[in-house]
Amino acid sequence: MPAISIIVPIYNMEHLMRRCIDSLLAQTFTDYELLLIDDGSKDGSWSICQEYARKDPRVSIYHKENGGLSDARNYGLSKATGKYTIFADPDDWVSPEGLDCLYATAEREQADMTMCDLYREDEYSRHYVCQRPQSLQAEDVLKELFANIQGFTVNKLIRRDVYTRFGISYPKGIYGCEDQYTMAAILLHDIKIAYEPVAFYHYMYNSASLTRHYDERTYEMDMRVLEMFRTLLDGNPTQQLAVTYQENAVFTRAFWNGRDYYSSAAFQKRFAFFRNRVNSLEEMGVIKLCMAAACCGWYQLSVKLVFFLFETKQVIKRLKRLLF
Image (cartoon, rainbow, N blue to C red; front, side, top):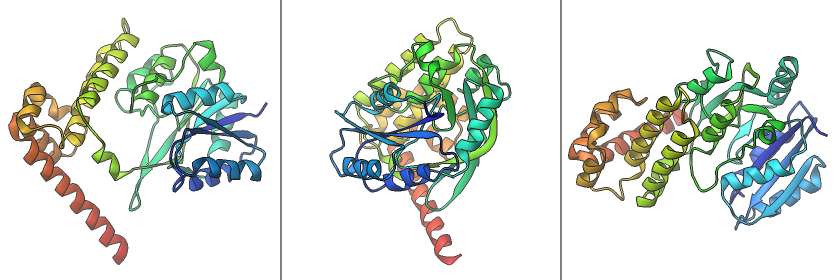
């Protein structure tokens, strides 16, 4: 039995997945299995998986019908044999010392979940994102999950039997909150948590995420996710904090992604009530002003201004990179 199972769900990532896999195979910690789960890719991803399986005996590959990210993660968990599990996304990459640090801490503390920091970056910049919780008690970390701790599973080494012990799996049919929902489900239980103050995971920010498809089904899915959290945390003191967090997420996604769907009047009709809550969002001041204006009937103008500012910022980053 390997110490760690690394699970990488893959869907149409032939142009990005090599860097991720190469960085995982370059870990200084070597007692692991790498599970590449091809979720019905239509490009050359499966051929690349086969190539790596031939190169390294630690690589196991699985090809399945497309079922979405949660389905691929659950499939990976069903095939994993390691004492601990951790996930990686095929468009990100990791520094070589990460698993060594996480495993040593997990074993020393006999932890069910070992958390660490991470990097958030794009092709022009890198930011260190501290994930130190104020308390290592599960009930306290659950609260912070909707405040200053990210719901990612890529920076959390989790004992594999946590999933089976509590009957937890990743929720199918939703997009964007699978990690956070699953972490909340785990943190409802009195598990042992440890923290390692190191960042090794490089979460690659993709500007294309600002132009994702949005329609009424997207809004309905967001509202369903909101109700899922409300139900999951029913009777828990964290419920209202989680509901507020998810309501903010519904509004934020609509603002950033809905410019081809919402007219200014339609956006105002749906989100006018949010005007007095914009200041609570973690956005830059000028963006908050634009969001507030959108709630008052100026959505199309506001979102065009925000994207203009964003694109200008990207141009400045590119110029700095060329000049310096």
